[in-house]
Image (tube, rainbow, N blue to C red):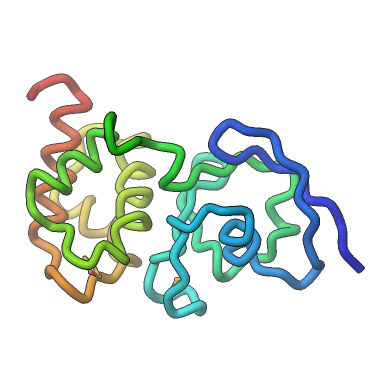
Length: 157
Ligand code: FES
Ligand code: FES
C-alpha cells in the first residue's frame, strides 16, 4: 500500500507518494531529479550519491521511507549552468568531465568532504571519493579539482 514521504529536496518541502519497498534512488528520479544516476544499484559505483541530512549516502541502497523527515540535496540543488558551485567549476576547469555519468555523485561526495573539512589533504580526498567510480578519466584530475575547489571556497584563489 502506498504511503506519503515527507522530505525537503533542495530546499523545497515535498510530499511524495511512495511504495514501502521503493528505493530512494527511484523515487528521486521519478520526481524529476535525473541528476541522481542509476548505476550498479548495489552500492558500489557512487553514481546515485546524494546528501541526506548533510551526509553523502548512496540512494540505491536505502528505501525511500528511510528518508522520512529528511533534508535531501541533489546535484540540481547545488549550482546552475550560469552559476556553478565552485566544485563544479573546478571539475570543468580541470577537464575531468567526459561522459559525465559519475560527476553528480562525485561532486556531492566532494561537497560532503569540504563541508566538514575545508582544507583536506590528497589522502583525505582519495578516501572521500573512494566509493565513486569513473570509467572515463582516471582519478588524478578529480583530486586536483577538489583541491582547487577547496582553495576557492576558502577564498584563496
Ligand atoms: S547506483 Fe548506487 S552505488 Fe551504484
Ligand atoms: S566522466 Fe564518464 S564515468 Fe566519469
